[in-house]
Length: 312
Image (cartoon, rainbow, N blue to C red; front, side, top):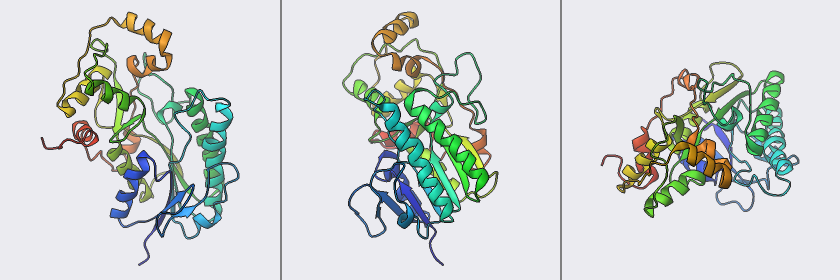
């Protein structure tokens, strides 16, 4: 019996490095789409992801596509809107349309919870069917890609699943998680003791577990959006404390009034105000309805992320 072939973009990134071994352990033949030189016999070089990328050779004999590759972490660069659109929106559709023509049966697109918005303060949790209110050029480019994928799903026989994760943490994670870990490791006091919000997070192991689950999930509609997270949604202060506990190095949290902290962040790092102080709750019922459950608790995920034993 032939192994099902899965094409993975972004396979050398933080999430991709965790996804590929799990796919292989589940019996899939993984074909990594790379920008430059091949590293393995199943790899294929496609160059940069964009509106003119030639995917035909990469898609030959492919059963499923997992599209992780994206432009991220550079929202303030010159011409950011156009660059994000070229990679995250047009590049996604170039791949998806080629996959549909090639007879690919399943397309999994890694999006972001920022398509829903930046905060759930004063409202209920984000749900997959809520109107998109994307935050920033990254969220906007992903929202545009989702809309185009939904149109494609209505015109093709390819099943399309969109996954919107919140902050993804794990070993070698970038962004805010790395900054928090660094501050705790250096014993830098953080002014977060009074923050009493509620936010969703997901370990990279839980995220890739769900993505692999979707590759073999053939029930449900031909186009579906899934919001996915760990089984706990907690405050920023509690999350920081959990990180410290996982490192066996208690976090130092200062009781700075929220009004003062909000004013300071608005002045020096406005993009962090919602991330640190605002709530971001998400409804994961659609993901759970597929039969999937997070394999790791948050405590276990953080211990793996920080190199400590999950049993200690």
